[in-house]
Each structure stands twice: as structure tokens, then as C-alpha cells.
Length: 410
Ligand code: 5CA
Ligand code: ZN
Image 1 (cartoon, rainbow, N blue to C red):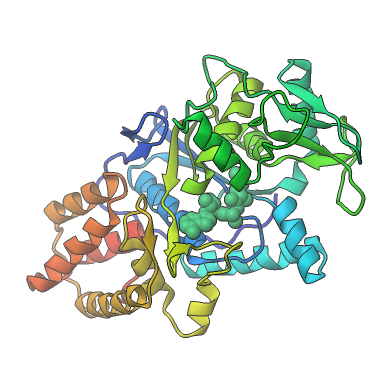
Image 2 (tube, rainbow, N blue to C red):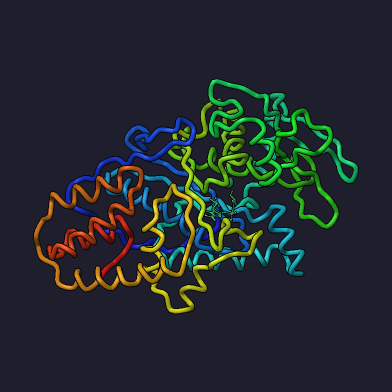
């Protein structure tokens, strides 16, 4: 397990909050997020380079809000996140910059930790690097091969690689069950997002890589499959199965992971365990900047560390991100931060001398707004409205802003 970051203090509020409901991409319904009195979540972690941009931050903040609601509902929470510390994009970036991929991953993971801590994002209980689970992944792929769900594809420069047969079906999974996409869209997204639909020798162009045999100049590990390294989706299936109950309550990440990543993470997990990976598949919208999705490959990034270095209060960054609904696609502008800074100043002034009013009615309303598919814009507006109406702040509401929005006023 790699080191995560320091956990922020989360005040306990009076009474018990409602169990949150969130949108499930598979059923396309807002669904109660709970499994037998407990809650578990796997959130796909970063591939450690170009960390931490506001798109990353928005996605981790969305699931931080969900976890805060679970804690407020007195549910026991288990939270696992991975870090993809070996994969093609990381290796490509390290090669481009002439640095060792391990050094790049370590330095960027450290920057990510610092940013998460500044933003007061609750850390995972287990933070797991792919390089820590190579043997487990190889064992899992070997099981899939024995079950006839993984098959070799010849290569000219190495031993055969292993691929997942996406015609696999089980009560727990079939291709498209999670993403609901048609085949043409899947083919397109596979090509865009790390798949290799054009590779010769596959049974289906959509079949994803499970294990890549050693190539010269590439990192590789000894394993039951010979020397090589894991494919991308199977890393998340194996880490989730190993460290969380099955099915997990929520499998989460940005909407760019809907297909192929989460579809096949779920497929591999179902083939390994016979059970669905998750009860709910949740996806955060994409943050754009200057007209396009904020992404490493387009280098239109706004980094959390650049904003804080420029003097931005991390609480204002949090408020700026919370002012947009987590499921919508939206574009970051400087105005987001300016508005959030004004809002933070107004909230802090309002909270300076809180009353002892129990504010039960408002606390219930505030909790309900957030528990309804993480309605943070409505929750922010509810506080604004109290200030506008000259209703004094109470200690309870100041604590609720801290516990549920992660913003400590005063
Ligand atoms: N390591 C894999 C997941 S196993 C990965 O996707 N890493 S990442 O660094 O590319 O992205 C980390 C998380 O940030 C993912 O959940 C991804 O969906 C999310 N993300 C990336 N770009 C954006 C964006 N522009 N807006 C919102 N979320 C984003
Ligand atoms: Zn993942």
C-alpha cells in the first residue's frame, strides 16, 4: 500500500443524515447508494503525470462529497483508490521528458497528495499502486485464461500478449451492460481511450489487453505468465476485488472512463468473481478549459498547485468546483474562482459569530439537497439565500458546511 494523505477533521452533526442517492450509468436511474448498512467505493486514481488539474480535482471532490454524506448517514465506509504508476501514457511522457518513469510517478503522486490534502479531500483507506499488485494481476489473468475468457494474440517483437474475450457473458455482465453504448461508439471510444481495435489477431476489435509481454526498453516483471506487465482495466478489477466487498456499492471515476475502462473492469471482475463489480456505476462530468476537455494530451490544464501558488485559497477552489453539478460537463473560467472568492468572503463574515440555534429545519433541507444526487449548486444557493435574508449563522450550519462541503469557515 502506498502512503495516502492526511485525513481532514470531519465534524459530526446532530441526528443522522439521509442515505445519499446518486445516478447510476448502467440503469440510468438515481439510486440509493448503500449496501446492507455499509458503503464501499472504488474511485479510479490518477495516472501520475500532469497532476493535479481541475478536472481531476472535480472528480475526486464529487466522491469526497458522497463519502461525507455516507459518514453523515452513519454508514461504515470503505474507500479504495489506485494509482496507475505503470502504463503506456506514463511511459510515453517519461520518455518524452527524458526522465525515469518511476521518478515521474513518485514526484507526481507526491504533488497529487499535497493538492488533495490542501483541498481537504478525504483520503482512501487503501491507496494501491499497480506496481504493488503485479503478481495478483498475473494470477487473475491466468485464471481467466484457464476459464477460456483470456486468449493469446501473437506479436512480432515479443511473446504473445493476452486479451479478454468480450463475447463473455454471465448473469453479472455482458458487453454494454454498464455503458449502454452502441457498437460503433464503442469502437470509436476504444481507439481514443487506450484500446487497440486495429490490432491483428484479436477475436473482436473491442477485446482489451489483459497482459502485455515484455518489450525491449519497457518495464516488465516476472510472473506466472512470464515477463510482462498488466493491461489497464484489469488492474482496477483486481484491486477492487482484493480490497473491497463484492459487489462494491459504487464504482466511480470521470465520464471518460465509462467506456472502455469501467465496462471492462466490470467484465473482468464478473469473470473472476461471478458477481457484478458494483451496484452503481457513477461518472463525474468533464471539466473543459478554452473550449475543450481539460486533458493532459491537449495540455490545456489548470493545475490546483498553480492556483494555490498564485494565492488562491483552497477553500475557494473547492467552492468554485462545487458551484457546478458533478454530473454536468462544464468549462472552467477565471470567473469561477473570482465568484468563489467573493462567496467565501461573504460566508466567512457571516459565520464569524454563530448562534446556538439548533436550525433543525435548515440542516434537514441542506442534507436533503446534497443527498439528492450530490446537489452541491443547490446547497451553495441555500447558504447564499440565508445570508441574503439576514438569517444569522448557527454553529450547527457552520459545522454542516465543514462536514458536508469540506469548507471550514472561521
Ligand atoms: N489512472 C486512470 C484510471 S484507472 C486515469 O484515468 N487516470 S487520469 O489521471 O487520466 O484521470 C484520473 C481521474 O480524473 C479519472 O477519474 C478521470 O476520469 C478524471 N478526469 C480526467 N480528466 C478530467 C476532466 N477534464 N474532468 C473531470 N474529470 C477528469
Ligand atoms: Zn481505473
